[in-house]
Length: 256
Ligand SMILES: [Zn+2]
Ligand SMILES: [Zn+2]
Ligand SMILES: [Zn+2]
Image 1 (cartoon, rainbow, N blue to C red):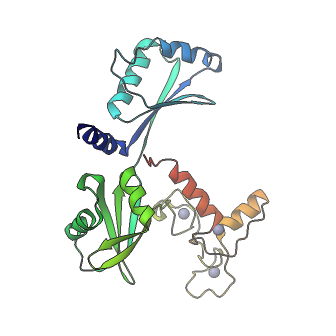
Image 2 (cartoon, protein in one colour):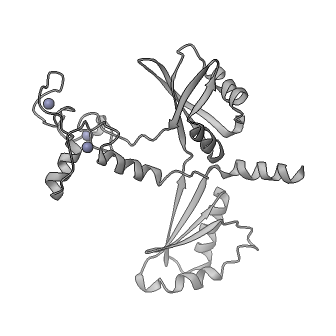
Image 3 (tube, rainbow, N blue to C red):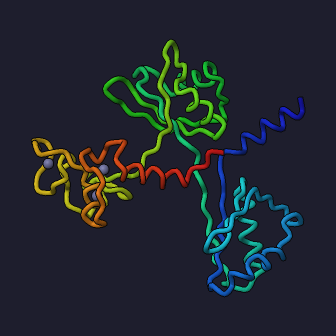
């Protein structure tokens, strides 16, 4: 009984990951990094780390609690020469899921209840982030911890009232609606407005009759002399540029 309870608590803490990246400022200090780190007594300082990884430029230390990350940063500062190492932090966020086409009448509270009571998800294991109307109902986005993510995405459908609702991972790289490139929003765009259908920049897409061409894939072909099939919309889920962006987004998600 006691053992079970411990497991539960452990799992609930598995929803975020903090990483501290330690890089020697000068290449010649690469050798001394491990030696310097050995001087730091993790046990005495009550720092819990779950993993360390060597990377080309230094070392990545992973932990579950932010306070452990803060402690490591402090300990490196006080135990090594000033400025010898650059210390950076990176927090991975929780995964998100999308529930497709729910009845428009369903409220946030009702959805919460259905997830808990009909699908055996614990209240602490998810947060409803936002929703938006689509042609056939409302799509809802929830942030979930690793445990619930595996469960829900594994099932592919959840019970909401009398319905079975499709559920998938929600991964949306930031894409500009003006030039269709990634990494910025339309309001910050400095590029020309591009036709979403044909990729040209001299007309609006509403009446465009030209052949479909993805501006992002075409750019890759022209700029890097590639040979990617560009006969699709820049919103197409199979677009290689979009797939590449999704891969990048996934690096910042902790699946637990
Ligand atoms: Zn843009
Ligand atoms: Zn066009
Ligand atoms: Zn494309």
